[in-house]
Structures are given as structure tokens and as C-alpha cells.
Image (cartoon, rainbow, N blue to C red; front, top):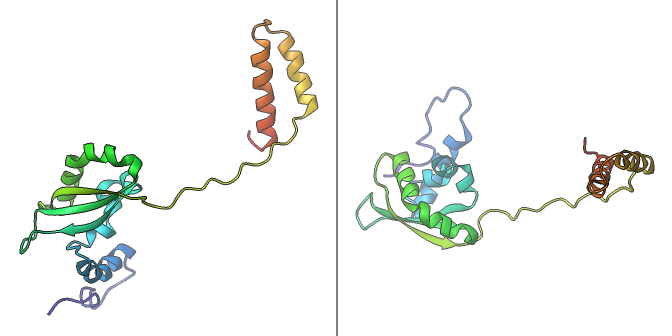
Length: 170
């Protein structure tokens, strides 16, 4: 008889439990049904490969050879723009995963190009306020003291600074 999520929790737990502990206990049966022998690949993926790598690739399926608990093929969804980069990092990634488990769980990777994670949306930029005429006049007076070749660059720089300060920049 297999262990359930509830039976894997301690009977007399003292104090609060971390979310990772609870998720691992709850995901293990569901993950096995999808072909994941190790639910930790789902729950601990950012910790296994690092947060940067986890932001553009994620595990899809872990397939073991029949009757074995090692030497699996791990299918990873990878953002298409990073596919080539991950192909070069495959040996390192397999080493990280196997090091996490302490045994050779993964023998090879299969990379599947897919969009991973939400598309980052940038907030619309604030409309530019008209520059302060007084500040522009001070910049023009200061630029008159500079060599003629530098004046246009100084005027443009001063105008950019005045505009940035108008948007709330320091």
C-alpha cells in the first residue's frame, strides 16, 4: 500500500511547516501519475538549477528505462531564444541534477522549445513634462563658457537632465 500525502506528514508536528515541505508531500502522488518519479524536480527546480536558469526552462517529463530508478531522460521546456545556450550547458545541468539527488537520476536531456514563464510587460512610460524654461536658460548660459565644439553636447546633456528631473528622477 502506497503512502499518501497525509501519512508522510508527522503525526505530532510542532510548529508551522514550510510550504515546500507541504507541496512535496502533496505533489509526489500527482507527479508520479504524470511520469515524474521525483517530485523534487518540480518543487525544487529553482534550487537545483538556479533562479536564472529556472526562469527560462522547466521540467516537463522524466522517463526512466523500464524497471529502473536511474538513467532517465528528462524533457525540459526551454525558451526558444535560449535553446542553443542550454544545449552547451547540458553536461553541467545533468551534473547539477544528479548532484542534487546524490545518484545518477538523469542520463540525458531532451530540450523542447516552448515559451516558459509569463511574458514580461513593462509599464507605460510617464509622459514627458515640458522642460523648465528657467533651467534651460541656465544651461544655455553655462554652455556659452565651454568650447564651441562641446556646446551642442552640453546643451543636449543638460536638457536630458532637466527632463529626467521633471519625471521624478534625482
